[in-house]
Amino acid sequence: MQELVLVQPGRTVGDELAHEAALADTRREFEERLAECGPLAYRVARGVLRNTADAEDVAQEALLRAYRRFDRLRDHNRFRAWLVRIAFRLALDRLRSGKRRELRDTLWSQPEHHPPAANAEDVAASNEFQAHLDRALAELPEKLRLILLLAAMEGHTIDEIAATLGISTGTVKSRIFYARRQLAEKLRCHAKLIKTR
Amino acid sequence: MPCKTYKNALIETAASGAEPQGDLRAHLAGCADCRAAFEQERSLFASIDAGLHVTANAEVPASLLPRLRARLGEESAPRRIWASNWLVLASAAVMVVAIFAARAVWRTNVIQQPVVKEVKATVPPHVTVTPQNHDPAVEPLVKKDDVSKHRLAIANNQPVHETPVGRKTMPEVLVPHDSGVFTSILCFWLRSLTRPF
Image (tube, rainbow over all chains, first blue to last red; front, side):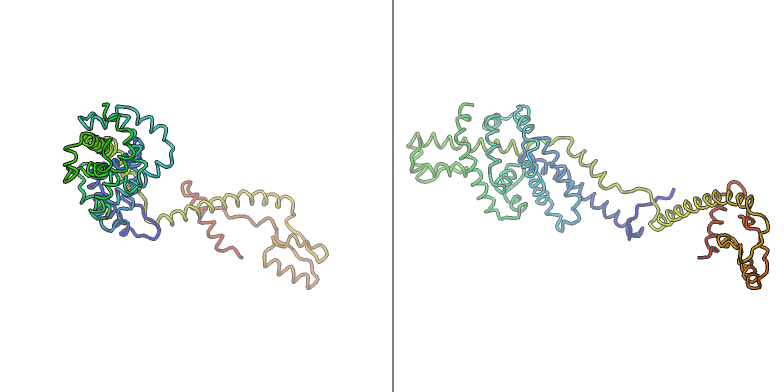
């Protein structure tokens, strides 16, 4: 049976086939990056939203948006940075909408979301301190929050963060320093929680 | 309580994660309060880092990538079977014309048949028309040759023998049953071509 293709007005069948081939190439290239960048988008979103379901939705949306505009990205090596910005922006929008705030808080307070850890991580993973930390993190300026999240992600060096965000390594270091200091200022009153655990 | 002189230095050293140097190091060696405060600051920053690590490295849901791939499949699935553009338009145009033609032929047959019977029943086969009893309403049904004869007779003040009005009927052609619609359409087109404007 002869295979026919959908043709848009003003296009010939040859143009259409070339377009289809280009789409297939785009999708192949995008899927190659998906295994690496999918978790990145999810973690950025989760760092902002603190909720698994919302973060997954936002990551999906960010990745789909990136896919739709992938051919417009001139330098595909900047894909990670681009995706991080999309995911971060979408997560902030979702957070501001506040539609699921109550559900998010409820889910976050459930202890099974925190993996077991040892020593200092054990202390930090305690629900109460973690809740204070996330609240303090949410109050940070956006650029400090994003840089802290990226710095805390496994496998991200200062140089990579600088390259991702298009800023100097010195700026990255200073922002991390100020962000941690601001967090410490907000959490110092909860330092007893650390001592008692 | 730490000594006021060294308080900021304590915090900044703890925030940077570096070991105390110079005067601070010497002071910490001799001041138990500052040493305790320094340890507390270091513990706070370690907890912050551990909490950030937990937040930023959340386990990615297993459904993220499969769901995304499914949505990507939906995004890039325009391969419906269609003919080329002009062929679709031409087919649609032929269909529309055929529908209207069939409808027009049907309506013509339905309307003309009773009129013919009625005229045959009411009008006598030969009517003598004089200038006094000429009915203009009958004139559209009269042939052009008859009209000329009629006008000539009127001009010569002579009686005119009118042709039977009701004899103008549709020709009938016997065709196979399966080509009836096609023949109807063909007749309609031929009539529309020969019809005076």
